[in-house]
Length: 467
Figure (cartoon, rainbow, N blue to C red):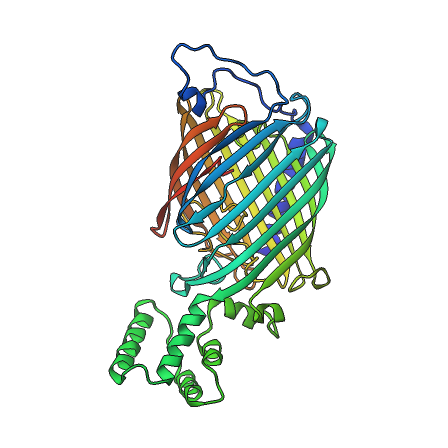
């Protein structure tokens, strides 16, 4: 399966290169005075439209923000976007800045900053993502088939710094180099802590005999209902022996007999658990090699064009990483304006990530593991995770009236297990509404409703398009 995935990636790359060589370069943004945005809504009736021909002007959007996502509950903050041309729009794409600091109803704090800069005539392209977050996320183990019952919550703080500098080598084609740092710290395995506390309570006699019998009966019923093989007699005897051993701490017993998905990964993957992990942190410090084809007519809300990004992260202990590993990812997006209906847009997004070596658990590919939690509408962040990932999404976008629009989407996800074997395809579906905030930068407000084949559903509210 790994070989098939590699060949699929090469095939996709060859098609993208062919299109880059034969396709015409899309012009950045054709100003359309018929476009509407939020400010148009409040214009006086009968007022004459004023067309701003000063392309060097910075176009700002600042407004209160409410984000809704199953992983965060409801988040409150403010959104800010800015777009500016640093050269002639005929030869230079719009440079963009966006940030939406959010504090959520689940006590999470998310402070992102994203920057894309095209210098004059696009000789250089700078791309930066900078994030600080206190963002507990669920985890269930590896593979698309990881069961719901493995659910755990990893509470951590993260600082992300990704910066690349890219040189133009053709029309809309760039190669670059950069640095990426993901620093996870104050990691707490919530499920491990709960189980450890319960073990301590049992050993201290905090539970009556009747409560323990009731607990064991519920555990037995749970195994039967979920078709799980219960612990063997040998395991039960070893567990009972360790419970009476004064030299075994509550935490030691938990890790030995009732490990979580997070602990199981390090137990099976490493001969010895890294010191960083023992101290509640994981570090991925990486050299980045970057290849980009960007022929979209706009970065925030494309109507047509193609985007392809392939990059590798080379993480080594001598650079400060917890472990040595390599990470390769591709990101392909293409947009078509339907010829029979003006401004009806079909968008396709395909991305894949593959790891080699011994990656840290928190940095493994996962649903909505992209920096701005955009992938996997219909799923909660972290529900699907693996050593490798393949993800595809299709979305159809239609204008409804003036500044309002709608979208419909479907996505498919596959993740691999510890041995890099891809498991079954999982689907998500949904629809959403759009409101244009600024017609020059095409920034908009998005509200989506998504659900998945397992019956889970949730709302997603955000700034700008998902892809």
